[in-house]
Length: 249
Ligand SMILES: C[S@@+](CC[C@H](N)C(=O)[O-])C[C@H]1O[C@@H](n2cnc3c(N)ncnc32)[C@H](O)[C@@H]1O
Image: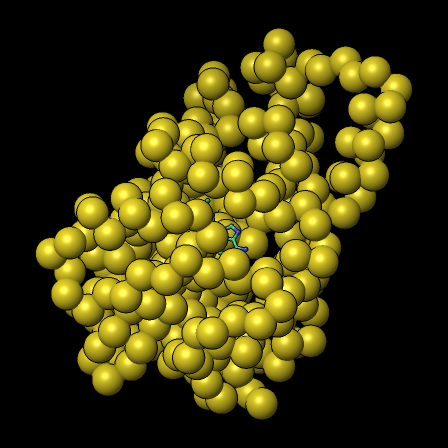
């Protein structure tokens, strides 16, 4: 997932990209944000896209730094939220070598570390930590690899949306797909997208001196995975992982 991908998708962002804010029915992410927010604190929204979280963050913090790799996304965010006075918009590649962002008290990063490139993800995680003050809080939401696999197991066992899931790949593509899956890079709309295991996230954060304070599932309806989910299918539901952490060094 390169910058061009996000620039291209920007004009149709609402139709193309899953809306975590709208689908977090229990407002688990909003509650986590409220718990650590303060009118004295600065927050970075890392990978803010068209700024869906800005109306949530703006009234809770002194200042919001809205960052994204896509200039088009940021332009839409700025135009949409022109009435929110405490927001600074910065085009930033969180996977770049050196960032010019001043360290913040809080970082919110929701479904932005999706790159299939290990190098880019490592840099992104490192930069999250370096942009956070000591004692600062991170709220991270990422796709769950466990959830992706559970969906495939349930689909296969109960033959749900059979046509959509029955894909035959030529040898070379199948080998590539197999290698990708072993690294948690699974296809979403034909784009290899990183999904994470809970324990993997724990390790990644601890390597960046971030101590886990909570791990929660952000659960969605089965209609986000299947066109025709069976009526009996309820729990367990598909989910993203939300991890909250404090920078300890
Ligand atoms: C799925 S969208 C999530 C947007 C937003 N956080 C939300 O929940 O509505 C992912 C966003 O991350 C941004 N992004 C991806 N890689 C990035 C990077 N290296 N640095 C900054 N932003 C990045 C993309 O441009 C895109 O706008």
